[in-house]
Length: 63
Image (cartoon, rainbow, N blue to C red; front, side, top):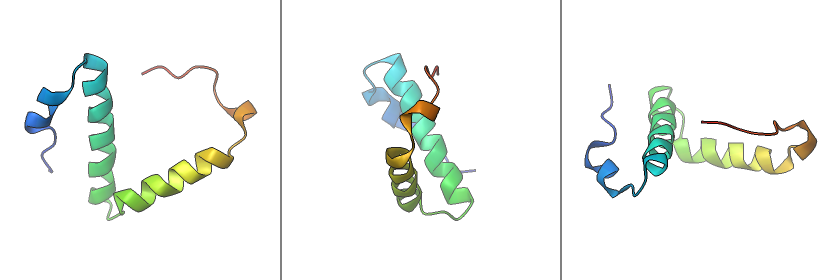
C-alpha cells in the first residue's frame, strides 16, 4: 500500500478541493501500482479528450 495525502490535505482551501485532490492522488497511485507512468497516462487521456466529440459527452458530471 502506498500512503497518500498526509499533510497535503491541510493546504486544500475547500472540501471540494480536498475531494478532487484525493481523486487525483488515487489515480496516480493506481497508475504506479500497475506500472504505468502517471504523466504519460494523463497526457494520453487529455489528448484523447480534446479530440472527442462534445456531442457524445454526458450533459452533467456529478462527483
